[in-house]
Length: 471
Ligand SMILES: [Ca+2]
Picture 1 (cartoon, helix red, strand yellow):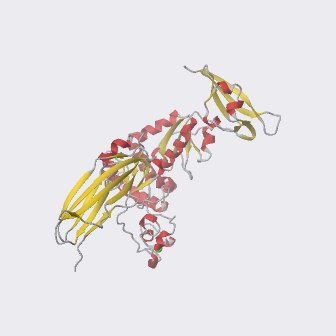
Picture 2: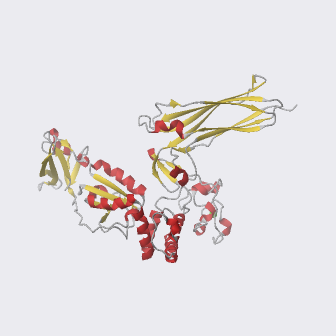
Picture 3: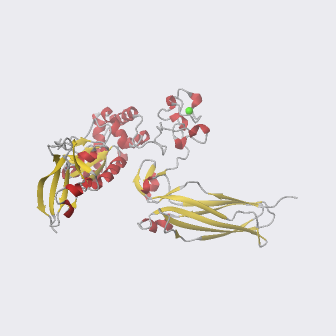
């Protein structure tokens, strides 16, 4: 006897993430609308009579802590499945369904879940043996920083653009036999070929060999391409110089770039993030190419305004690792040194190789209670004019130590400690200053200085009594 049954398959992507942004710019940039949470059933009938299918889809949005989960509008689907038929029942929870919750900070949206019940009836009888309950979970990416092929989301995770089908030009690869075998072969990891995808996690495929860690991803189309990389700066510079030298009109047309052959400069994206490549290849660029990029940067009014910001701060820091070309007014700094360097300045601005780098560092400095200006990528402000400035050095003397500022600064217990680096600390070193305000809103600056008695001891010295603040 032939066995009669209905096959039910629940389709959803494991570990799926939705991007909570469907503005036209984002859709264009990432090749489509990625804000929907999609699930589906594939149903196939091997019965010889019609089957009635009932499906409910109930989306639910939950916060980061898991508390305050909220059910959204459910949908019921009713279908008739004819004998021998195969159908797909799709459901999509659109952004419009959950976007109101995203702006609600109490909610702190983290996931969307879609719960679904399915039942299949034949002649009014429920078919047994079909799994009735299904669930899919989607992490919601609330964009913080838009990157090349990915988005950095709130809560520090990433959303990756789906790669689709990539093509590789591997005719020049020296080891033809190992292209596409899942093992990253450095000699084949050349521009355009990238060992047939073997060197990036996201493009390697399902081969067992792909499980080895991939740390040489040089394909800028892959979402796991490192943010601060420009693996082929020579090629980038060569191509850029060729474009600008061939172009008759070496003036960038802000309104209509496609009118000049300089629009081809946008093709340079295939070497990596433009700002990163520009920084790494700058010394190889011809003067003509540099001038074109300068004009290009000035087109954006927001970038033009950034140049003006340089005047409004007492120090400008360059956070790039390699900065052979920098703004004359900038001071080189690293993530480790900037906290200390920042102390000597009332207000500061910083830029990095990439907007993400500068944004991250700017955020970590906000606690200092100073005015912090995030200038973004160096490439965006490289055209600004500024003169070199003399750096005020804080000489930190580690041999001198003043313990517990909140207790030891004279009269501190009746005053409010303003300097964040002096709060909740077991002590500061010689040369460091702490600002306190008294009940009368008077500001005092105390510095930890050598006590000249012990080998390590420091005492507090009042540096200045500042203006009376407005109550
Ligand atoms: Ca290979």
